[in-house]
Length: 484
Image (cartoon, rainbow, N blue to C red; front, side, top):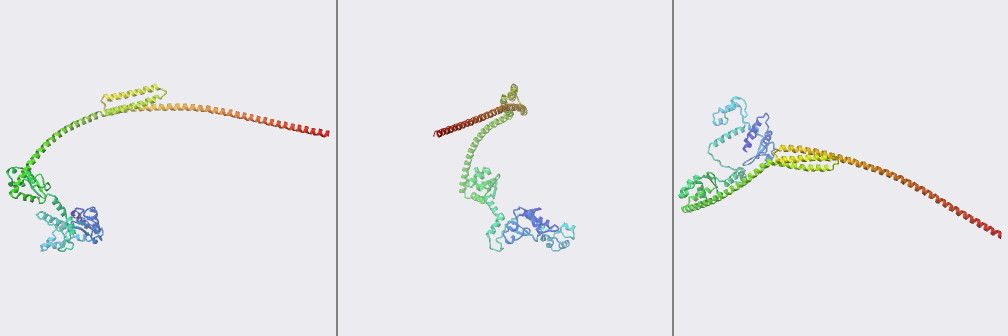
């Protein structure tokens, strides 16, 4: 909250002074600047978020809400600029300073800048005066050993003997009192040095316990008194107690002599038990240390093995990769041999070139395996050989393609010749078929004519025989008539 009010360039006081120095200061502009410069501040909010209805009616550019420790307060900025100006005319200020009343004279101290601008109105803001007075008050308070009392408002009506629980609890929470009490409950407010505690109670203990060092002495006392480990904590030079535990410890130490004798016997038992446990832990620590040394020795051997393996790998990895890539070239050479087997011309020359490439591959493998070559040298030799193999492989494939195209052309010519011969045969067959059809048609016509002629002859023969029979019948009838 103090940062929101007094911070440089963004605090409400500085923003108000800056607005008051403008030629035409406006309260709305000041309010907007407060919201914009402190946007996202947890203690600043808009008036409409207030719990009071009257405050919620204030517009956003007419005021702002600040979360104080006692609660939220809405400030209306309508008259901030007018009330912030505390300047007097120089003549009035001189008149007040010459007053015989010391109180009135102290209210308006003499300012050095007034001597330079006498007779003019000087802007003196109420906020700057309040801040300077507050700074003087804080300096005076820091120079004294003063203690403060936390005050709260018991009620909003400002009447006595009336306590509002919710309002009081809200003020305690906002002021941090609940957190302070929780911190005191969980912390270790009481503390003292080992040497002071040792010198305070060593007169109650026998000589064998007085010889202990202060830290071990305190630890033995606490264990003998059955104090819980959560009730105290050991530092480097001090011991810290929970609230009320130091008084309980002091009361036990100053009890009757019978309880003190029982306490001393418990301290002795705890010392014996502690020394026995310390001896056990020392033996166990020695065994653990021996096992740790053996484990580290084994780990050291493993690390050496891995480092040596890594060094060997770094040294031979390029050669191994080169051997793997070089051996893979044999497969490409084998594929070239398969292509060469399909060739029909220049077969011996092609096989000779493939044999030379195979020898170069074997030579590269032997060179990588038997001589020390750098990664760059291996890559250069490999790339040169790969380019040669690729070039020969492309040439073989091109020759094979040309051979296949030539064979295909010859096959097409053969097929075309066969098709031509088939075509001629078909034409001849068609002609022969036409001739046969024509001959068959002619024979059919001749046979038809012959049949028609035979039919005509048969008809003529039948007609003649019929006429002959008629003549014979007529002649017989005439002969019969004549005979009658």
